[in-house]
Each structure stands twice: as structure tokens, then as C-alpha cells.
Length: 186
Length: 186
DNA sequence: CTCTGTGATGACAGCATCTGTTGTCATGGA
DNA sequence: TCCATGACAACAGATGCTGTCATCACAGAG
Image 1 (tube, rainbow over the protein chains, first blue to last red):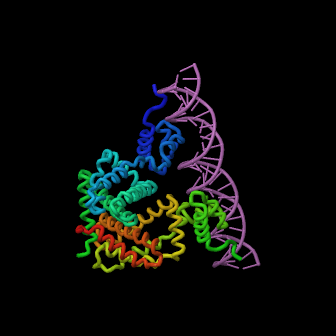
Image 2 (tube, chains in turn blue, purple, red, orange):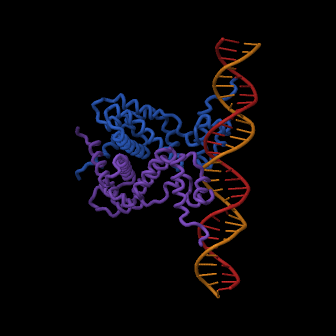
Image 3 (tube, rainbow over the protein chains, first blue to last red):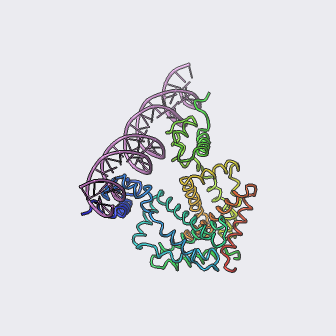
């Protein structure tokens, strides 16, 4: 008989998502999350550096994208390599239902939306060295990554409107939209 | 003889910038900022909703950009209207020296960098209705604004490397870079 | 000149976030 | 059997942020 229930981190994440949904992020205290998961407030901070991170743990997406870019065809232009990586992003996505709940909770709280932006910026930053290995200067690489992030956000917004489309197709649509938007000719 | 020194908000902003520079954002408490400015901690929160906002007060840039976009030539394509607005952004900038100090302090603190991103996202959000008045759908407008923000960040990074260039010229360079990056032909 | 309202500020109490530290106890290996 | 380790609780404390009320110079009304 184990001294403690297993998967303390998972229990904290599920309790947090549930409480954020029912009473909102601001009105939920860390102590309450921990109690719901059968732990103390102090233990919460052993698993997550701060309250917001309970919904952002794990760097799978970042690692996946970096790996894809590094493995991409060297002949691809930098933005194309990033878009190719993005098209495979759903390989690390969890269940759509979980993601939808998470997205809604994040959208409902400014503090969580803020953290979401930072996470995307972190991914853009992580992609800089990967592009650097393809001969792109850091500042330029960061710019290209920012554009790719914008495309990713556009694909995600399309996904919310059409939850049954494949992420790859949504990225294609967003990329096509980018071309229209910057095309110099009317 | 006035009961209190004037420009309490300005004193707080200057004290905060100074303290953040010398000892870092995290190691500076709100009480210390307030004491340095000759006020109490409670008074700090009458001027700023939270500690980070002391470096982000005012919406002049956002209001300026929205106004510029609304006043732009209706024949301009949406992204061109945003870039035209960006080219005039330095009209609301303060002294370069102040901005440089501020940018460095923000870059040195994750918490401030986070807030900086949110402020840019707020500007992008505020530009959506302005583009809407030009017939652009909200989600698409948000995408175009995100691209313009990426261009603005690129222009700012170029500015740090070349502080004497005009912001307008830097925006032009960044816009040209955007065309190169997305151009479908090699 | 006095009265009174207004507005900026101080003083104080209180909750929540986050951190440092130490004690406890089941588990697993020597 | 004994001890090292890991997972957690318990406690103390700094800091961020909020609510509330008192204070007092100043301005305008009379």
C-alpha cells in the first residue's frame, strides 16, 4: 500500500482546470487546488513554479517543433521549414476536449492569456538556434519565428471555428492567407 | 506652499526605472519605490494597478496607431495601412535615452518582458476594429495585426543595433524583409 | 472670514502568492 | 538491520495587492 496517491502532478492539473472552470482563475487559491488534490499548498509549488504554470507544464510542443525544424529539408526556405514543422504539431496535442476546455479557461483569464503569450514567445525564441543552424542570423530568425507564430495563432483561431479540420490543413490556409496579406500587387 | 510635491506619478516612474536598473526588478519592492519617491506603498497603487505597470503607463501609442489607421487612405491594403501607421509611431515616443533604458530594463526581467508582450497584443487587439471599418473580418484583422506587430518588433530590434536611424526607415527595412521571407519564389 | 466639500495622501488591517527550512516516514538497497 | 532517499507536511516570513477610514491643505460659497 503506497504511502501517497500516485500522479500528484496530474491530480493538481485536473483539480486546477476543474476549479478554474467552475469559479474562475482569480477566485481559486493555490491552497484550494492543493486541498482538492489531497496535498498542501507547499506541495503545489514543488510541482509548479507558480500558480499559472499548472496549465502550462511541459515543453513537448517546443521540443517537437525544434526537432522538426532541425530535421527539415535543408533546401527549404526558413519560413517554409517552420510551417512544415507546424503542420506536424498535432502529433503532440492531447485530446481535443481537453484542449478546448483549456483554451476556454485561458481566454477567460487575463493572467492566463498573458502566460499563454509568453509561452508562444518562448517557442519563437527556442526556434532561433534551430534556424541559426540553417544559416539565418538571430534577429532575422526571431522575426521569421514571430511570423510563424502569427500563422499558428491564425490556424488555431480557424480551428476554434472548425474543430474537425486537420491542423495541417488549417496551417496551409493560414499560410495562404499570409501570402495574400503581404502580396505587393493588388 | 503646496501640501505635496507635484508629479507624483512621474516621480514614481523615475524612481522605479532607476531602482530596476541598479538592483533589478525582482529585488525592488513596491514599498522601496514609493519611499524613494517620497510616498507610501498604498499611494503607488493609486497610480498603477500593479508593480509592472509603472513602466507601461499610458496608451498613447495604441491610440495613435488606431487613429492613424482610421485616417489612412481607404485605398491602402490593410497591412499597408498598419505599416503606414507604424512609420509615424515615433511621434509619440519619448527621448531615445529614456526608451533605451526602459527597453534594457524590460529585457532584463522576465516579468516585465511578459507585460511588454501583453501590451503589444493589446495594441493588436485594438487595431482589429480599426481594420474592421475597412472591411476586414475580425479574425483576419487580428492576424494582419499580429504580422504588423512582428514587423514592429523587427524594426525595434534593428533600432537597438542602429539607434540613429529613423523609425520610419527601420519599418521600411523590416517590411522589405517580410516580403523576402514570405516570397514564394527563391 | 468662516464653513464646507473635495481630493490627495497616510495609516492600518488583511488575504494571497511564493520561498526557505526543517521534520516525518515509507521504501529500497547495503 | 540500518541508513539514504524521496515525497510530503508544517511552519515562518517576505512581498504583492486591496479595502477602509482618518487627515488635512485647498478652493469655492456664503
